[in-house]
Length: 185
Image 1: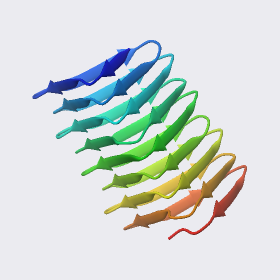
Image 2: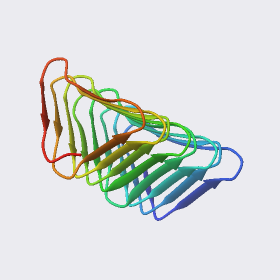
Image 3: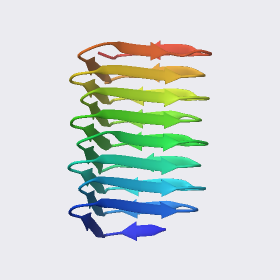
């Protein structure tokens, strides 16, 4: 499924975009007052230069084989924002992800990579690679009223220009790998 240069709005309800294979959203605005779900049940979900928002609900972006959030993309929700790939990797580049009242959860089975992005979850932020490596470079990760948990089963790399700021705890863990922190606040 391809959505390009399109405005999709539900003023009182939810927006659901689901494809069996790949889903690509480009230069579009998607708004669901009570929530937005974008899902590729067997494929990869890619969002380029688009705004996805929910003023009173949550946002869920999922791709069974992977999720790519690219430059100029903004995900903004009142409640939780979940970005997940049950069997692939998650790549976040030049993207803003914000939960004003809830949590942000970014989880991949394989690798999770965040570059030049801003991730903010009022009640907490979780970034996780259950089988792979988590890498964060030149990004801001913050939680105004919660904690930050970053984990990568095979390793965690936090690089230059990255800022991790939380009201409560900041936990960085790697059950089976190394943790490398360079030029980070």
